[in-house]
Length: 257
Image (tube, rainbow, N blue to C red):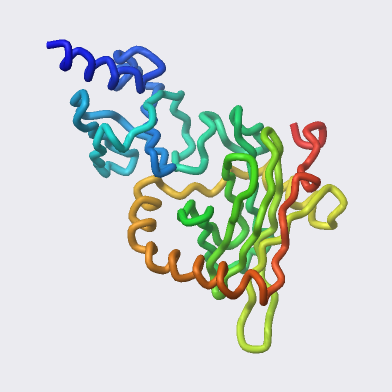
């Protein structure tokens, strides 16, 4: 009996609010945080203490997770903006929003209406994509990180981020001899495209990749990710020149908020 009660209490410790929040408030959405870094939003359909949880996302996909895979479960207010793993501020929409406590935030911006599709990765995880004249908002842990993109070519962006800071990275390509070369270029307030980037972000909502698509992409691209990260570590990091995103490139709060 004590073992059963202990297991139940351990499971309930994942929650930071009462259980009656789940599925009973129409303006709330449940958020499941997984140990692999994924964040799943939706309606919890089933919850078995010390066993599994079943959640349905906004696109009607249903996912099951073992108790051992979960870090915590919380809720947030639902908005008209589609939810994803990387757009994880409850009321994110047009304009700049400060990162959640303990995080830094990066805006990946394409100002080119002819921009080809880009897929973005954070270390070994697929986190979303954009194309044409759009932007993606992504929150990250501070410290040393590696971001990279895949389009017609791969580009890597080593980063050193500071908690609470906001960064802007331009996504574009340069025409090479045989193909277009993808580039990730951090900017600051002095760059000539800064004002255009700010105007575009203030006027539009971020492009959001649905959580279910991110999960499927991570499974599908696992070998691709492993192969490219290995090439980066063993060859490209030394033989190629990459931009770097540093704490000095953070955009001052008074400029944005």
